[in-house]
Image (cartoon, rainbow, N blue to C red; front, side, top):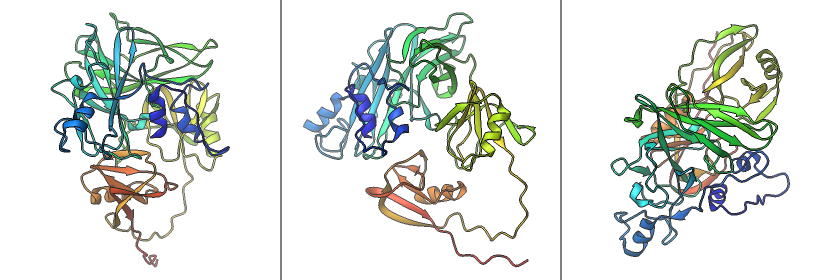
Length: 427
């Protein structure tokens, strides 16, 4: 949360962890690979409705967002302006009750747009695997901000939709791995769609830096049907490149679900399976690689690798078990495991057996998904490899890795999967 707030402050950002304790992946969400901050066009500031609620409200939320701590305003907004177009950013921290935001609540962030803009598309999430599209943002299609605390803060956006032909619309979501996905320090020019030419984004950064952008594609008259697609480039020696939006809608937005999304039938080759146009979210390691076979062979030699991506001449590694996502031009390489010797296996414990601890959460979350009850979160956790605990809060199931520490969160429920002690079968 502090890193996101720092990025939206537009002020200098200085990581202050002790030597050897900095979270490099978190710091990279704030800047280019060379350390240049990616900032909005103005600092994040509390919306006017927050002041009205603080001065005249009765705590019901009828006049504005209700904070968990009085007069510590919970909803802040700002924008990135480029070539007359505005991208909206909304940050929620310690919001006591859910709040529905209207464009009229943020007139300075979303003024009247040029005629090329067909509407605004709202979305949320940080990281390719966590992005969700929420349809049109307008006075009749509000942005619903969930109640939250400090560790589970909210970050939402709205992007302009441009026409790209008959029943064709495209919205630039930006660099979704960053807290500020659209920043003047990254985007230097836009070429709007014209005829057969797609939306083109001129990007800048460090020489040979890899930049990946997300777009939403579909019918602009029905933004709820739009879908996410990704395009990327490696910047040249001058630190520049042009990234063109895909010209046709892609499959539904890749997102973590209890059951893995169906993937194309892989084509076997040697000791690997290769899946064209698939990648992984949140790469942790990148290294030079000459071919998909070479990347696969390297993965097979790493104890922590179960899949690797070849893209732009690099082998890219993510966390083990990461869900594949659609990435045009990438190749997902999955080493084939050796055929194990069959051994007796104990019965699988009931997937619905959980210990529920009220008032307890975790100090960080990697994945959030909609959930209707603590029992449903427990059942989903049981279906995920390596999941031993999940937090149910604000109608969401929230997952973290095994290193997450338990913390006191008044309205959260920690669901701990209970593995029964079963006797092995006798054969």
